[in-house]
Image 1: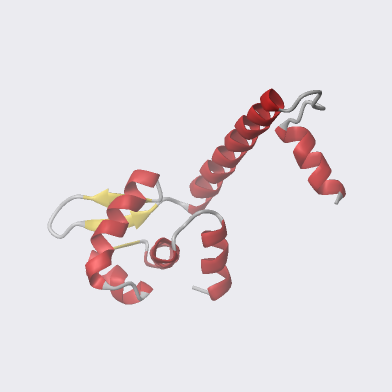
Image 2: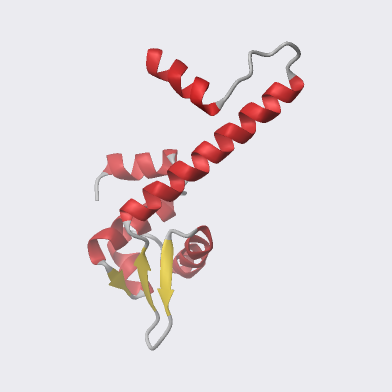
Length: 119
């Protein structure tokens, strides 16, 4: 797990602890919360709450049992979900901006993307 990976995950909306946990789980495949906390360097009192929150966001899956195990959503699936969410929010934002901008040039996520490529 590299600092650059943690920083990039944070830029994509992960908290610091979520980024450390996700990166650790990619390497560990599945693990108990105590193992994740140790490997990721996340304080034990924060691990369960963070893992439950990550499950709600779709970043990890919980395998109920004795002991409870956690595994990460595959990176390809995560990236696809993040990309789809980003494009949806970008399109929604462009639509909202168009509705409040008199005489707008009809911003779209596609035109935004093309402009970004030219820059």
